[in-house]
Image 1 (cartoon, rainbow, N blue to C red):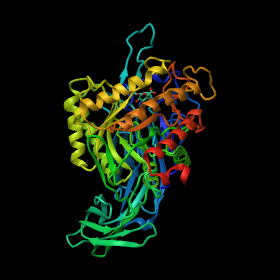
Image 2 (cartoon, rainbow, N blue to C red; image 1 turned 180 degrees about the vertical axis):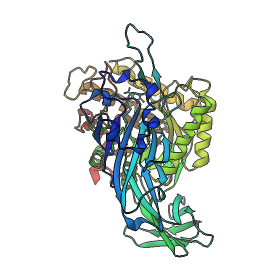
Image 3 (cartoon, rainbow, N blue to C red; image 1 turned 60 degrees about the vertical axis):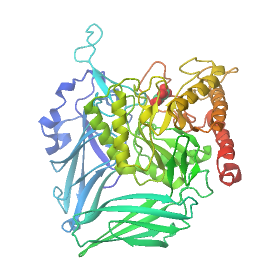
Image 4 (cartoon, rainbow, N blue to C red; image 1 turned 180 degrees about the horizontal axis):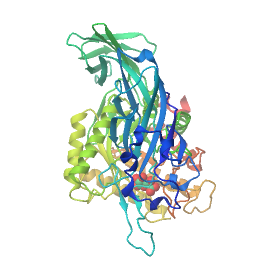
Length: 608
Ligand code: GCB
């Protein structure tokens, strides 16, 4: 099955004037009537073509589909060649689908998954018909509840004067559109009977970076005890650098070509290939994994890569674009990395959920450091059931991204109600669990409550905080930014003795709006505000504990309709369709100057 395939898609019920007066209680109809055993177009006339990968929200002219909450059904047929029968195993893999997914092959349930942003896979060897047509059916539900990650709730207003019976709304604690659909590629792939299922790699370098060490551990499925594993390390030209064997071992070698972040070296993002060869009787399997050799460490005032202190200059992003919503778009990925380079950034945060693997591959290759965040955004209560789902999401994320050199920090969430006493045991458990799975990376949680009330900071390695001085507070008063920024950043550090970075600051601007002196929503105000922050950042950086600045946001992005949002969140350096605002030029200049101050001079844009 190709990855740009066309699914047939059906919403449970056709258009009513408002999406929200569909009752949530009769949404089991597709399950009750076993739609997975039928052809969708035979059970309903409301079947429309729907691309995959894509969000379904903005594909049609129908506001009901845009705002739909509940189960939708996808199906498509595909041909499996006869030569696939027999000696191999076949798997079906979804890059992601938001949020609850159930999958059938030829009417037989093969898997279900909760969570909107991480992959899931099912073995389908036995369910497929070889040498003939097959059918995959997917039921997908985007409803967010107090137990999903992220949280949401379905609210039934009880004012019958204002709302019809059964009317409900989906609420959630974040401002980006909760796009729904099969967002990432769907693949059918094969493996031999016994195969290499997983590899875990960690790397380190000696103090002087003269020696590099790669430790690996290989998980083999279906292998006999006589199975042999051979590992070769290949450089970017395919030349063999070193070899070893066995399921768990290390490779040490001299003069490694290190993985450096952009701006810290003239050749950032160097990747080796770890080529693993399994030989189990007459069965052979090969697995090629791109790896970067780097060391990563941290202390109370900084993060160090290859023993050099890092200063983050980047932004928060979103997976967001016109028409496709959150669907993977290869052209957009390459465009965004061109813009990241043009800006002279060295990092971004995957606000507020894990991004597609295709994006992460580019970050690895381009030396862009990533703060890898799970969708724990805006959590406002902290029970055991939620914790279970939170840990599961963490586990899936680390499983997916553990070998990526670009991932330099795990973020276990964004802006929770961390002043609540229950936040302390909750986040202490999430941090402990994360460290158990991966002790090699620092852990953060992006905070928005005050340093004086926050209960989660003691467990974190790095304090990341978001603040909108002179935008959400003291609107229009640019003259207050420096004082407020300096006080708050210093207080975080003085109280917790950890490195501090600002992961969100910014202002909305409507491209083309200007005024002098600046007023809010103009491009002039957005840039004037940024320049005030820059002054504060420069002072803080010299104090030693302040390790980075990430503006909100890389580009404007889609939000639910709100009277204070002029069609989207407008805090982007770029418009939603990637046209630079004044702020993009201001940032480009800032990042070039910062590189001269903190980066490797010969790697700065002006010297390349
Ligand atoms: C925040 C959130 C981010 C929002 C931003 C805003 O603090 O973390 O998701 O988009 O504010 O623009 O309000």
